[in-house]
Image 1: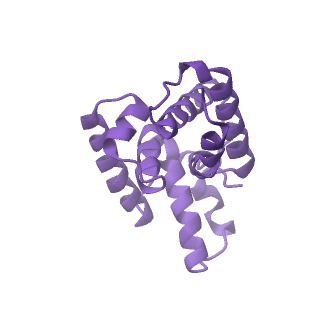
Image 2 (image 1 turned 120 degrees about the vertical axis):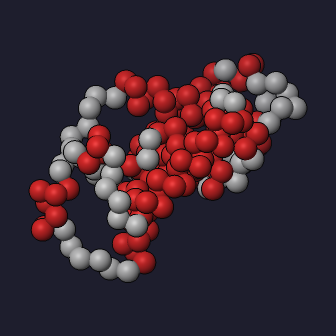
Image 3 (image 1 turned 30 degrees about the vertical axis):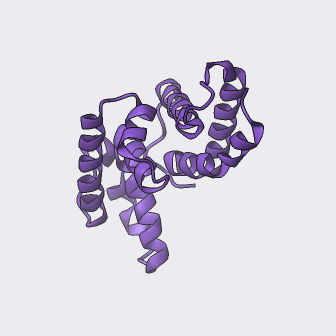
Length: 170
């Protein structure tokens, strides 16, 4: 039987990861709620003694991936068309916003891997279980994510698909 206290103890980590994945507080809270609902509904699938945290993050990853696949196309804005209207840099706060913007420009599978390792301090083996991919794939995604994130933070243009429309930060 699942210990409800152990489940509750995972909520801050789930919220942090959901916020980083979605870039939006409301969407993150909805994702956490959907994850917890699924976990409670499917609790009999959890193996007592196994890693509850990894199981919950696996559920969240799958729920998020399903939501992304079902989501209608988002409205986009060409950054070059509105560049003159954007305010100038404001130091550390803008760097944090830039980091969030750049994270959202990473492909979903790279962003998920990077966030789970950097934000949630998961091991590569845990990450491989959560994402249901081989360890080599985890290492490859992380390497590509780190390089791309650094390039984006240094001003490299976003990928062709991302260049047409940056996601709005809320």
